[in-house]
Length: 138
Image (cartoon, rainbow, N blue to C red; front, side, top):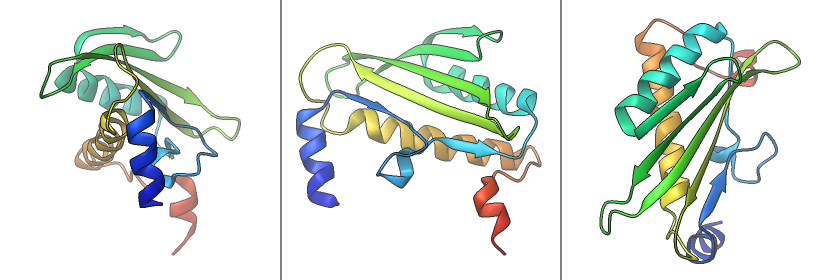
């Protein structure tokens, strides 16, 4: 798994979450929390971490720009907040570099950190941020 992450980091400049992603940390989030509470937390986290944030509550999308630390390259980030067929609130992200063939794992790290911070923000607001599958296990 570590070798695969290194290879992906050296050859990819785009990362996105998917429910069936082979990397568990990139499967997005599914919350047993009302949509509005998740939306507010996602928007707050996006405004704290991204520049040029634009929101479209009707579409459930938030977009913004992130800059890399070293060279200050601009990356595009899109966050989608939706209700899945079972009624859980779902959060998925895409992070893409505008230049270069490799991001050295920056986009993956950005997504993983964003989701961790989102979990903490929801929990700080009194919500159980565990996914429905985690909540089902004792």
